Image 1 (tube, rainbow, N blue to C red):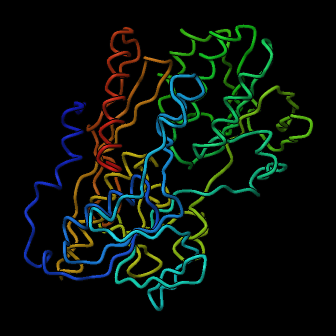
Image 2 (image 1 turned 135 degrees about the vertical axis):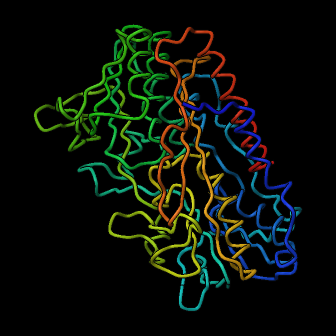
Length: 421
């Protein structure tokens, strides 16, 4: 298998800057609006301003700061803080991008307007939705926004992450922590298992009489052999994974009694991390770009919605499998979508391309594993490229795991700098 190096992967992040501008791009004055200033939306906005310097590029987001989910699990093991994860998204004016700090409520595809929460309308010729995910609060009996204040999900980095960390700190030595993992798809497929590793590390080093039990709605998961190898080596007494086949699917929770119920058992817990089922953010449904699955079907070449014209969807909200819902995917999709929109508004046809994703996961502070995937979008459909990509070796020495942790840090610094710098 081909295993791209860190250098080759990060080189792709800056490739757009060296691309020559066709004259039709430079002269175009289209109105392009982007909703969502995360890894996909911010990247798309900057790329579009580079590609279409005369176009009106508007970025809409309700916040002036972005709290990164990648690396946020390290808050739970004490390696990082929320401040380390927080980045400004308030300086796009210096890039020539119009910034609107407000919540986009819905989209009117007929009039091609984004409707803000206060009722104001923002017109567009082309729209990119990069809204991320929302939670299916009706997907697990008993789990509500109020219940999440006692049983935090921490699946959107910020106050919930701090709450879960505080609960772990306040739990007595000997308490039992439970994690509930939903069925796929959800943001960051290996995320729950990285989190399980880092919580287990915290318990092993700080509360050695405590244990984490993972109740999973699945029987397999991303990087499963690598995680299980690490768990057996590092946390044999502090982490237990129970699959759906062994009654691991949680069907109900009670935040008052701090219990989780499966089909055949009730589990009392000191701390509960309940990760809910997910779907595309609410604006996607309101705008008519989400289908019955709750996610957004798109043409894989242009990222244009198959349900609404002139609306493109990137990042976690889009149906782009086998590409995972990850920061790397969103960043790359933002660039490619920008190129395709520039071609479309210039009267050119979108062109198929190749896509990559790389994902690092910590198994302990200073120890990481990774997987790389390569994909094609020929014919408007995403497909894995057989024989491309790669995964960390199973029985690697700790020195290689440490090297991958260093690569993870380099990757994070690079993508943060490119997206928000």
